Length: 154
Image 1 (tube, rainbow, N blue to C red):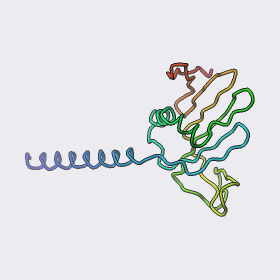
Image 2: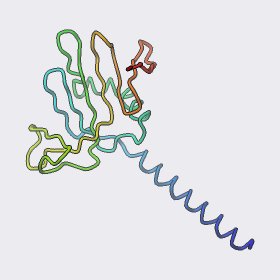
Image 3: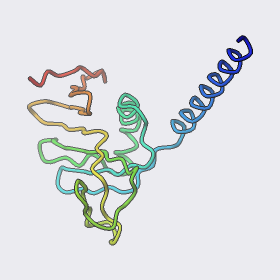
Image 4: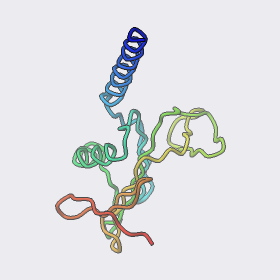
């Protein structure tokens, strides 16, 4: 009986190490900006290898705000400073045509200019709400010191 317990324990430890290694490899991949589509104050940013978690995605945006401004001139604002940026995950790759729940970008060269609608983060600034970050776990207002405060949307 003890022999079987040791084999089971060894198998569980091996599986845990394998899972930890896979998660580490996935989280260490650099985030790549593949394309940006801007129309007025609205910008769509197509990402390859975005962070795995929602908090990681928000942290990536916070850490890269200056680079986005200097390298890509994002966000594009209107005369009142309002803007909206949507960060899309390109996990499914570029698709040749619009299928079901996908979105196409005319500035990308056809035939592969569509992606699955896999929105990872929505960042906007308006006079009514201020700087706001939205993901599937909620809406957050960004305070002057950079803290995120959950906004009641009810």
